[in-house]
Image (cartoon, rainbow, N blue to C red; front, side, top):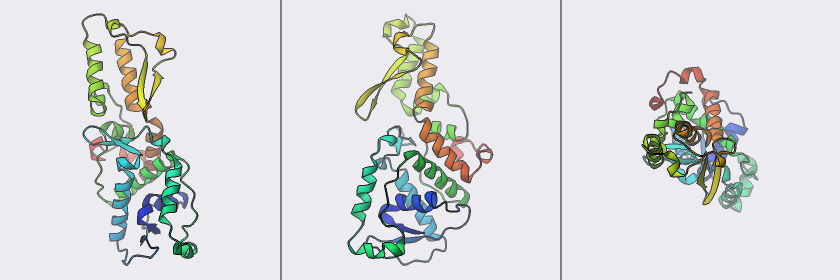
Length: 263
């Protein structure tokens, strides 16, 4: 499998995901440098480990855009991943190609690629590669958020898990929960707003939520719905895709033996 270092995610995706490579067996890695030349080295396991390490460093780098960090630097799927413009991938690939490199295209089998079209396919691929690392015993320097790991092993997230994601929001919800006066004083409804890439968007926690005020009677329901949205619904699609990919390599029944922090 020929991998350009500057396009490690894109090349790995095409060879492994689109090429339907067998991740259970051994894979032979050949690194291609920026000039289109094959790097020296015999893959006796070392290149594979380097490949997995470098690949995951790129995949889980918040700057890459598919994962974001909690305040304690734990990772979880970014809700903005679907907004990533495929043109950035195309631009990156065009920049990586050199004039003489076109001569090697036929030999390398990596010419004239199209941008990766579906961010959910990438998350599925990410899950597959984490599964590969687990079965091969390759230690990844990545710390996933507990609420994300809970979803992977089908454990439920509780309201208190919101602290790890947004401590300020959690504290505000606790103020609502334990407020001694009339909760309607806060002027809250079953409609919330959030910043999505610099644009404020409204989210209804229930149908016609903007017309339903939060009262002393429904405040616990409000807190539960708000927490569920933040911890589960907001990143449901990429989390499901990642989990599906992981389960392709390691069936769910085996993952269920792990506590979240042990995955």
